[in-house]
Image (cartoon, rainbow, N blue to C red; front, side, top):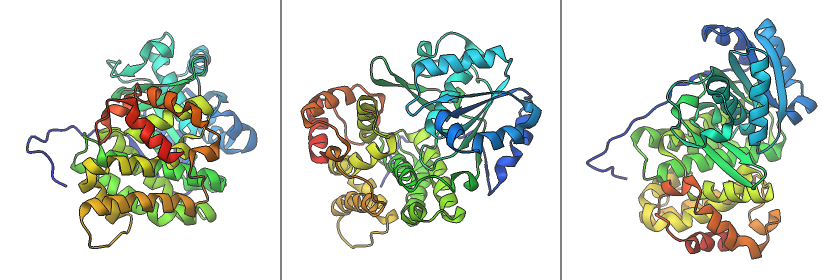
Length: 386
């Protein structure tokens, strides 16, 4: 798996990561260490309604919490970011603590921009649009897949146009990530599996990206080993040891792809997630094996190393190992009782061509391991995934 003789890269992972059962109790200590006293707590509606997790974090913050914005929904929207920022500004918030999955953390990233820069979040779509660090942000994930607590990207949905927009900037990477396995102990098995497969996709696409480099590869390969070992058991057993390891694997995969980027699986997942409200991790899980097969002609050396990390020990050529890796990913998804075909989640076959055309315009497509220039290539993958 050689690197170019002209290898030249920047690896940026500034987030302070804190791990431990019950460690979320230290959130006020971390906030004060950032020099902040007036945090806006950002969380999602269902988490606030159905669990006491946001309430606990607010209690841990004490007088350091000036208010709670709990209107985040799955695939959070531009309008919610704008609304949350207006609310935080009215309270004089000097920082943000996000509690939840990727949607809550990404919403908080958007609010962090607006509290500092003003305007509407749609003004900042794209990559590296900012010139300074944004509002201090502590992220506390309650799922084990997005890795958003250590990444430079926020994905926010434009609900009016059924599109997911990307906001990528090193200035929005959270300052602190608090990983508390106790907070995912009650996560439903289906969500453990789907978010775990999301993390696996992050790791694999980071390793096959043309922007891969030795540090991101090391992180990605170790994340794959951990996910392979723990995802099935963590899905079926709520023990904090197993789920904690999956939470850590997600974090490590997040650091890998935040530097090396993701590819076609994410471009498709963004597309079908926005059009059909398919859970992002589940969408990745369904298409990833087929993307790996499509990419194997070009990145078989990388996928052979992925196969080894997945526990495949056969003495066969790298190209064959690459295909074996895609088969193993499908096997892992099945072991977690996840749907494995697009038809199983209600996507119409008649609309696959349109999905391929939209996916080609997604920013992640640029970093796919096999270059893509025509929607017919993506359609080939979608038909096989159907």
